[in-house]
Image (tube, rainbow, N blue to C red):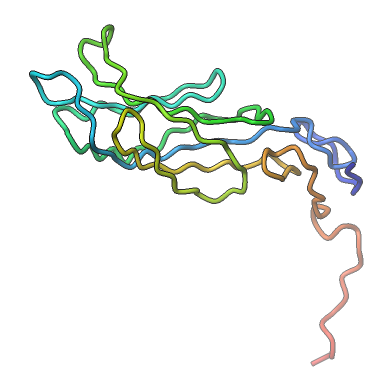
Length: 168
C-alpha cells in the first residue's frame, strides 16, 4: 500500500499511488549483428522488428549488409507490463516488403530499473546485439513496475525552513 499524501493528478491518487500500476516506458536500442543469410543469390537486407504485446517497432533496412550496424533506438512508449512480460526480437530479410523472409527470432524477459540492459541473443543462428530500458511510471518500481514507491512531497513538504546553523 502507498500512503504519503500528495496533490492528486492524472498520474497519482491523493495517497501518491499511481493510477497506472504495472506500466513503464520501454525503449530498445538495436546495435548490430551478424551471421544471417537471406536470399542465396543476393546479399542480406536485414532489419529488426521488436514486439511487446500490441506494440511494434522496427529498424531501418541495412541494405546489402552481412554484418549490419543499426544503432537504432526504438521507443515502444508507455506499455502495460504483465507478469512474465517479454520482448520479442525478429530479424528479417527485406525483399519487396510483402514477402520478406524471417531469418530468426528470440525473446528476452523484461526487468525494470531505468538503466540500459545490454543483451545478446542468437536468432536463426546469427548474433543480435541490443539493449533495452524499462522506466517505471511515477511512484512505481519493482521488476515490472507493480510496486508502489513512496514519493517525497513536492516543494518543502510544508515544513519550516530554518536558517543555516551555526549563524555566520
